[in-house]
Image (cartoon, rainbow, N blue to C red; front, side):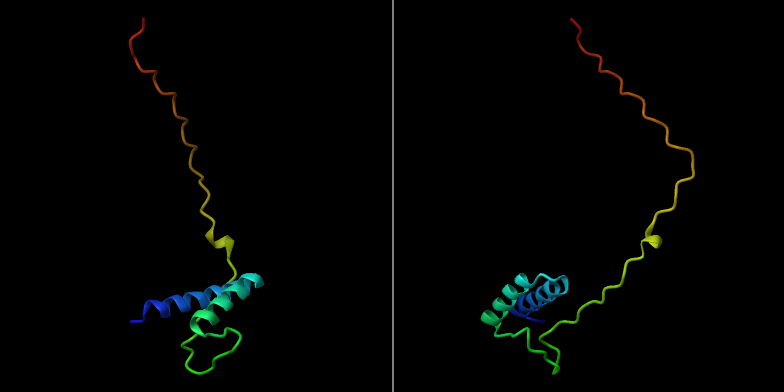
Length: 92
C-alpha cells in the first residue's frame, strides 16, 4: 500500500499531464514547480526506468454520439396533468 505522499505526488503528476494535454501551460508550470520543490520530481525529465514516478494515462477515444442517443419514443404522448384541486378551507 502506498503512502499518502506517494498518492499525492501521483495525483500532481496526473494533474500536470492533463494541463499539458489541454494546453494550460501556466497551470502546468505551477504544478511542475510544486512537484520539484516538494518531491524533487522533474516532470521534464523522462524516466524510462521503472515507470514508478509516472502513472499510466488512460487513452482518450473519440466519443461516438450516435451510439449514445436514446431510442425515440414512438408511443402515444403522455397525457397532460390536470390542475390540482384547490384546498377547501375556511371561507369567510
